[in-house]
Length: 488
Image (cartoon, rainbow, N blue to C red; front, top):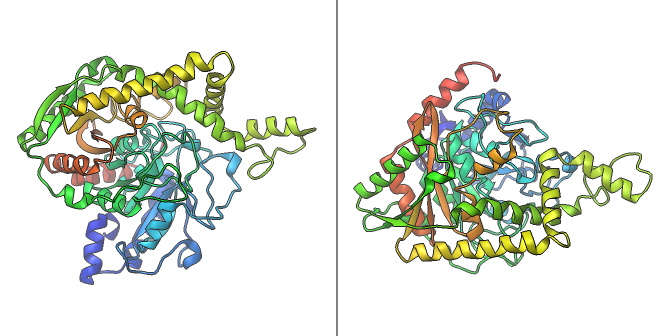
């Protein structure tokens, strides 16, 4: 079953001559054909047997010709990049996203684009012009978002690994709800060139993978400065795979106090305690820390992110590219009708929120205060680093919820990111690792680190994975769910 291999196992098998990258890709293609009609994880597939025009690099390099997937907001020349939105349904990429180009240069092969919440705005992958993605653990539940298609594909062995984007938790939250590993690097570690912007000061590309080692391999390949991205950091690429092989002994692990007020589910609280105890059993030191402004982070995030979204999405006007409404009497009507027909309800909601926050008379009251809170939150993290080397937090306050359960309650949907979005506001690195199962659904814990200290984050994340091996648990649970029958 070549499709069930980790990236590390596939690379080792190719090196031994047991099989080829073409055979692995063929196995994945066959599994996608069979199972993706139930999951809806893919929105575009590379043509079978296509050459370089389909993004297939010559075999060799660190990836040896093995396939990868991209979220539908990452450009790759000659492929559609629709951001799961009607307004970009006809758009075809004329250039390559830097992260994708680096995977191709490393010998990777493009397999397809994965489904997502429209323009990355959502936490359930239900806000997609292509329809919702279903969680492979339970087809009646959401996979999380906005990188829900990527998480579902990796969890169901429809991809070796995937690239997603994380603005407020969009890699780590679906990784937790689908029982895979998701990594968000320090802001600026990975170039955003070619990533369609949602909130430019928060967006970051990272991998979703079957284990911590695979996430480390992929992140090493896509990290590094890029002159085409002004926010890209000129910092050396760390040796993350080597870090993942180190012991957690001696690490000071911070446990923030007062998380119960943020709606922490009892099962998640128990899993968090078990994860902390497991790290302590491996020689880490538990340290209590305070993040007093954590409870205000959600309000600040949804002011700042929507304000940036309002600005970034202003370019989609029906004039230069994308959907153009028919029959408009004048330019103003063209703008109004194209945007009303092209954007879904959640994107329209966030554009309106952001435009309001930036409007005259409200800028200082809302947007500016949110920026000040962002600065204070970053200071809280800085003070925590004086006492610890990394933080351990739940990734989500609860397990995967049912499809449709939160569509009429946007506040409940937004609060699902309460533990992930503070990390984006502060620009910190984090890795989510599956550690437990509750009522047949996976739960994830995230390790958060200092800026540019992905080495410590991966060291602690790998220690968690050793304490809670999850691969067979995921394989059996997903197989049972997919064997149970058609999606409801």
